[in-house]
Length: 214
Ligand SMILES: [Zn+2]
Image 1: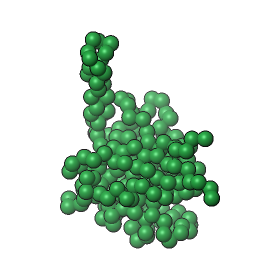
Image 2: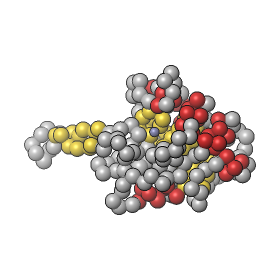
Image 3: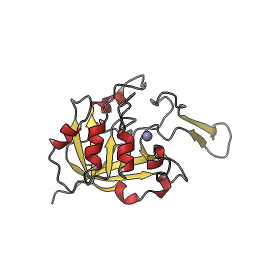
Image 4: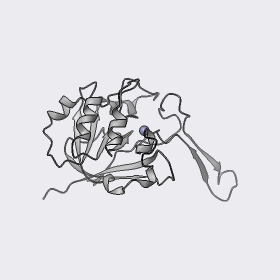
């Protein structure tokens, strides 16, 4: 049995991107087949394509940049919550979970995860996100990281302050996850955002390690 579940999405040309962002370019610039001495590729993408972390600087002018964030919060126990029938995740949904008060990390598996399987895979504006009151509930809790299975924690075309409330409270935001194969239980999260100088976020590889049953 595989000990790890990869919850990152595949970075590739043609992957869904946020409206207005430039698409992913991943192409071969040197090729053994063409007689070059090696294969070598070029990658150009928005930080907010695929699996990524938002740093506070994404929305807060004096917020921390990705290279200033502490890695501790990205590695450790994480609780997966299934919200498979909700169109929005509200504070009432979160209260009804009766989470242990020391919960530090939460990932939401919603119907969004199915979007990654669609072909052709275009941006889906009707994805599930957290309402402002849910963000306020998280900000008032011990939670330091939240994650969601599409490109934003905040619903599309929503004037709410979901991002700002979370980032202001120092809550790390992990977006663009694929939680299709993840059960509703506790795992260990290992997520490493790229160390980009001065950036408002970074692409990340994120995996879950199955917790050992004692
Ligand atoms: Zn983002």
